[in-house]
Length: 441
Image (cartoon, rainbow, N blue to C red):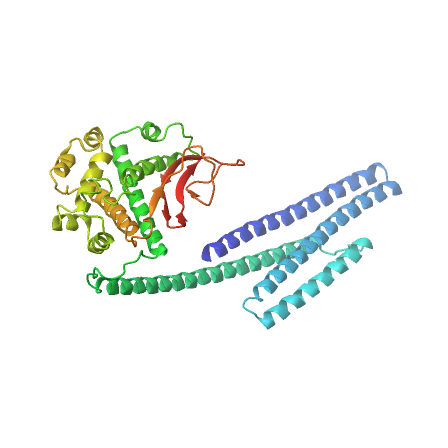
């Protein structure tokens, strides 16, 4: 608000200064013309004292006065128009919140100024533009126009201030709703945790689809955080990110250089979700795994969801999740890649020995592994006569359809955009389809 007013005052001072300069210049020119004409008149009278010379000087004076009067007249017209604009802005501002007196005052000003414009029109048509002091009239009209312009700036500032207060109120309201939703979620989680272990005879059903979608979003968010960290490590190690992205997803033209991160994200998801449709995540043979009963997935989900991956691994070092975490890290991070990024293979050696490396990189990876495993538990927490949630991906060059796909980038301007690669797999839960995320070319 203050910056708007300051800018308006500075602009007004500048225009007012130009106006004074213009008027002084007109007066100076008028004075010089008068002196010059006086001298010419005297010389002319000495040389040739006849009526034609005197008529010529008089005609020049009349032309100058008419031009000055026309300039003053035009200045008054523009000043009046600016008054109409200022009054109309005031009329709009007074409507919300409703101000009856403000509306009536602005309306009266508009009517009065429009009448003045009508009178100016008649004066111009009848050529009644005489003015005893056109310079003063011109200056006063400029001052009036500047005042009207300042009024419009003030009204605009008030509108912006009002809109800012409205946005602040909306933010406060949304924060209250968010706090309320968080409290409700904590209450539900507390009741769920306090319900105790489930009886084998209890009828366990698949969690709500909304809960599965929410868990998928958390998983995707965790993957993207890990990708961001991995790209940062690559840049520190002077990797060629273009070449790395091309090795993952070849022959892809990115509309934005930053979109290369989606190639790395697709690689993480491809490795982490590989085997998702199998009860044991293909870590061991399904016949050898203890995952034939959905009770296993419910208990595993309840145990892991409130703990950090590191805490759970220390608690159950031989659990299915621990085996899943170790195997996925060894597949995801190649020995050459780890040596290039960190200068050694210490993390890989610790993982191979069944230990938890105390690094930010591995902690971020472990969070991804936890989110994927929890989603896997939810997918298999269904009745035996129901079908578990299964992943699906879209082939390259497939035609984009919003039924099965969601684009992570703006689709190119062509009739039927094609899929360059799948970033995050989609899911089929019974007869319901959760869209996969794709990059379009």
